[in-house]
Length: 103
Image 1 (cartoon, rainbow, N blue to C red):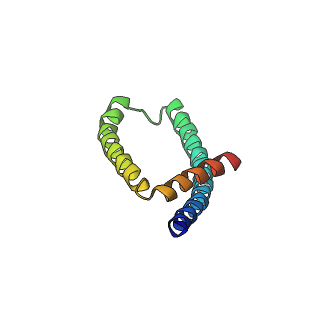
Image 2: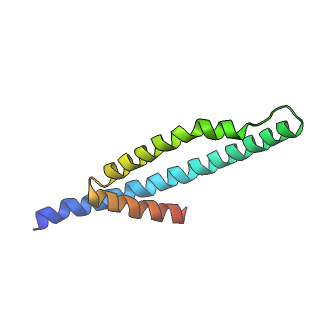
Image 3: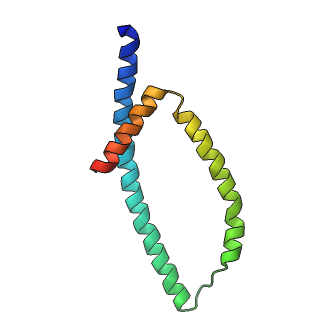
């Protein structure tokens, strides 16, 4: 019985560690990306204010619509992949939540 429990517990703890590190990396990357997107938005607003650029939002939506379908399929595949090894996935989720809250 114990020989079946030890690998699951080890996998759970490794998952927690990996989840924690993933949360730290994603949080840092998200902050950096958020600052860059905000700076780009401000730059584009300044350019639009001075009449240097003009936006066709309807064309933007038409071009972006197929990307939403691709992303939906990718997230479904990712969910299947992450639930393959349940103890690792649970540990990873716990570590991710803990790392995201603490940092």
